[in-house]
Every structure is written in structure tokens, then in C-alpha cells.
Amino acid sequence: MADSLKQLIRLLGYLREYKPHFVAGLALVLLMSYTSGIIPVLIREAIDGGITTGDYRVAVYYAVLILLVAVLNGAFSFSGRYLLVKAAQHAVYYLRMDAFGAIQRHRMEFFDRTYSGQLISRITNDTERITRFLSFRVRMFVYSVFLIIVSLYYMARMSGTLTVVALLTIAIVVALNTTYARKVRPIYDEVRHQTGVIASISTGSIAGVKTIKALSVEESLQGKFEGENEKLYGLNVEATKITALYGNAPFLIMGVAMSAMLYYGGRAIMVGNLTVGELTAFLTYMLTMTWPLRALGFTIGDIQRSLAAASRLFDVIDSAPAEVDPPDAVELTNPRGEIEFRDVYLTYHTGKTVLRGLNLKILPGERVLITGPPGSGKSTLLKLIARFYEPEEGEVLIDGIDVRKVKTSNLRKIVAYVPQEPFIFNRSLGENIALAKPDASMEEIIRAAKIAKIHDFIALLPDGYDTVVGEKGVTLSGGQRQRIALARALLLEPKIILLDDPVSNLDAETERKLVEDLEEILEGKTAVIVSQRLSMAKLTDRVIVMSDGRVVEDGRPEELAGKGGFFSEMLGGGGWNGQ
Ligand SMILES: Nc1ncnc2c1ncn2[C@@H]1O[C@H](COP(=O)(O)OP(=O)(O)OP(=O)(O)O)[C@@H](O)[C@H]1O
Image (cartoon, rainbow, N blue to C red):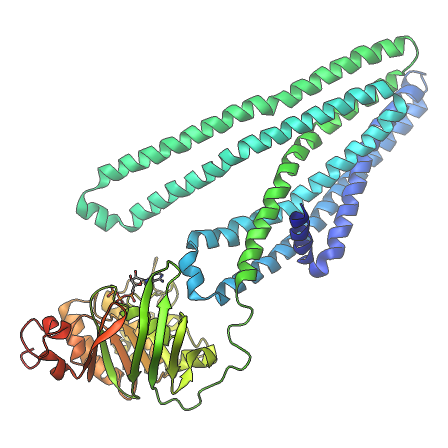
């Protein structure tokens, strides 16, 4: 409870300069409740003071008054809703910005632990729920509670017994609606989840259509889809059953209450304890309250859930590092490109220890091939140089400085990491190359593309560098994607270039060309290349073989070729010169 209050206060803090709008919106909602609550009293006056006494002018007077109050009620409702929705949208705008910023600041490890779908849901579903809460639920809550108070006040002044009947009815209906909301919500959550499952099977089957057709697995996929579709159907039927039962029960109870009022009220009128106007007012109150009572049941259940959504978003925000760099971070102005691992240990969040006391020094301008069996920690080594992960023990140094002490923006300029499967965004080729330097000039982009040997291909496209890649745009081959990623990396003129398995997805001819071009691309840079391919060894002047997180072979390729270890096995008995 105290926790929920804290979340609520923090959430309201996001209203910032829109707090007055929010407060004014709430005040207008109160006025709206009041104007709704006063109408039955005016009806009573019209009946008792005009209709039953035959005073035509009194009846007309109240009719006009009711019309005026109704117009006011509409105006309050409109402006209250407008102000609250505007304020809520602003609060959620800031919240979304905060959450997105925090996600950007999070370290790689966070993304290993968190499902991307969950994060997307935080930014989309959770913020949507909070918007609804701040604009609609809060409004309905305030409106309903205040309307009930106003109604009970006027009712109590007319008849104690009838007010007790009304009060009992209110309690039962709110309890029923709250139970209904509590029962149906988990099912609707499952419906939402199941709809997601069906969507992901559909997208998977569309994205992976080639594999599905190649393996002829359409039928088994259809079977899987059918199973999930049946589940969704079952859930919807269950929700409908609960809705049918609980959705109608409150109307029945209201009906019972009104007939009891009519019976008791009728007798009270006959003995002169109640007027016709008063009874009509009571019945009108019951009708006026039917919908607010229903909304109240839902709102009560939703407060907790909306605050839980807010709390999930706050968790994402709070767990992100406030600053990416430590305050004493330095810049390397004239990097030489030396890399050193000093007794480095790394364990991933899964508990898997990948590096165990790694020691390694790579000299400026050296070209090193890192090879070894799968899972031996080769890619991890590259990721530590780029500081995607930080060692739990030991240090990774560039030019003798711990990478943790180098400003991230500076480090990204010095070290370029080209992943095995580079991500090409659904944007233009020019934007994709200039990703790390959005203000790069066209000359810079073209220069990088030329060095990466992709310029000629781009120049031949009708839209050149403005050609959009991806859905509804041009499709790139594996080799072209690699070269775009290389151009992207080269744009910042890095001193150190890290290539993670650059040729694994390429055919022999594309691989041969890339190796040839890399000779030029890597000119004057320290290069660390992870690969199992011999073609890559041809490019390098040193080979390091990793096994189980340690260096087991280290030397010039021609030296290692004859040693009978992993590298000479990789040569397949052909020897270094024989290749
Ligand atoms: N982000 C991560 N979270 C948890 N474990 C990881 C992560 N990345 C890698 N690992 C694990 O660490 C071990 C080493 O992985 P790494 O990718 O460094 O090996 P590798 O030698 O490059 O393998 P490959 O040649 O198959 O790419 C593997 O067992 C892998 O499952």
C-alpha cells in the first residue's frame, strides 16, 4: 500500500508543468459529479412544487433549470476530460522518454537478461495503461465516488430507510463488479498473451517462409497454429461466460432494489411520509448511479495494475546507470592501437565463466587471427575490447589505459566492432553507413563506402545512397551487408578494428574478394579477427588459438602450422605453404 502510494506520487511527478491542468481537470470532474447529483433534486422540486400542485410556472422553471444544469454538466465533462487527457498524455510522454533513454543507457548484460518483447511491452503496453489510468480511470473514480457521496447526501435528507436500501445496493454492486473485474482480468491477460503467441507464429511463418517451404513443414506448422488458436478460442469463451454472469447480475440487483424502493416508497407516500417527487428522485438516483458503480468496480481493480505497470517502468529507469562514463573518464587523443588483457576473468549472468585469467598483448598495427573451437570465448574477447562487457577481475587496456576509464564516445571512435551478422536498419544506405556519425558529410560517407568497396554497387542503384534497405526497399546479400557494416565502422576512422567471423556467411567467391579488399581496408590499423577460416589467417601476422577461455597457441601462422595443435589441424594437413 505504502509502495503503491509512492508509485502514485512518483507518477504524478511526471505531470510536471501540467499539474495545474490535472488539478483543474479534477475540479471540473467534481463539478460534473455535482451537477449530475443535483438533477434528481430538481426533478423532485418540479414534481412536488409544480406538477402535483398544478403550478405550471414552477414546472417550467425547473425544466429550464434542469436544461441549464445539463448543459453545464456537458461543459464540465468536456473540459475536464480534455484537461486530464492532455495532462496524462504529457506525463506519459515524459515517462516514455525517460524509459527509452534508460534503455539506451543500459549495459549489454541487461539485454542478455531481459526479453526484448518485454522491453517493447514496457514502452508500449505499460505506458498505454498508465495513460488510461491517469486520464480515464482517475476521472471515473473521482466522478463515481463524488457522485455517490452527493447522491447519498440528498437521499439521506429525504428518507433514511430508502437511503439504507440504496447504500446496501451500492455495496453489493461495487463488490460484484470488483469480483467480476478480478475474475475476468487474468483471462483477458491470457487472451492478450495468446494473441501474442498467435502473432509470433504468424510472423515467424512469414519471415521464415523459405525454410518452411524448403523443409515442407507447412502441415506441422498448421497443426501448431491450430492448437494455439484453440487455446485462444477457449479463453474467449471462458471470458464470455464470466461476463454473461457478472455483467448482468448488477442490473438484476439494481432492479430488485428499485422495486423494493417502489414498494416501500409507495406505502410511505400513501401514509404521507414521502412525496411523489422524493420517490422519483430516489429512483432517478439509482439509475444515474448504475454506470458509475460499474466503472468503480473496474477502476478499483485497475489502480493496482496501473501502478504495477508504472513500477515496472520505474524499474527499467532506476536500474539503468545514471551516466555511461565515470566522472574521471579520459580521452585518448592520439591512439596507437595497442591492446592488452591482464589476468582477465569474465562470467556471464548465466553463471558461465568464459575467460579464466586471460593474458594477451596485441601490438599497434598488428593483425591477429583469433581461432579455436566453438564456445572457447573468441567473440567474448572482442566484446571486452569494445567494452560491451566488463571483466569481473583483471583489466582490458588500450594504449595502457583501462577501457573502463576511457570516455565511451572516444572509445567508439578508436575501436570499431563489426558483428558477425550486422544489423542493417530499415533506412537509407547513406543513413546506415553514417549511423555512428549522423552529421557525416556525403564525401565522408562515400570515402568510407569506397574503402569498404561498396560504393560502386550503391552508385549504380537508381536512388544511390538514398536507397532504402529492408522491407519494401532493396535487399542486400550477405557480402553487401558485411561491406555496409565495414563502411559504417570505417567512417569513424578507427585505430582498432574488430571483425567477428566476417566471412562465415559468405560464399567462396565473395569471401575471396573480401579477403583481398580487407588487405587494403585494414591498412595501418590494429585488427583482431575472429574466424575459423583459413582465408583469414592469410591476412594476419599472428594467430592465437583459444580453448576454454585461455590462449593455448600463439605465434606466426607459419610457426604454428607445424606444431600439431588446433591451427595445424585447421590447415587440414596441407601445411601453411600448401594452402
Ligand atoms: N551474452 C552472453 N550471455 C551468456 N552467455 C554467453 C553470452 N555470450 C556468450 N556466452 C557463452 O559464453 C561461451 C563463449 O562464447 P563466445 O561467443 O565468446 O564463444 P566463441 O568462441 O566466439 O564461439 P563461436 O565460435 O561458436 O562463436 C559460450 O558458451 C556461450 O554460450
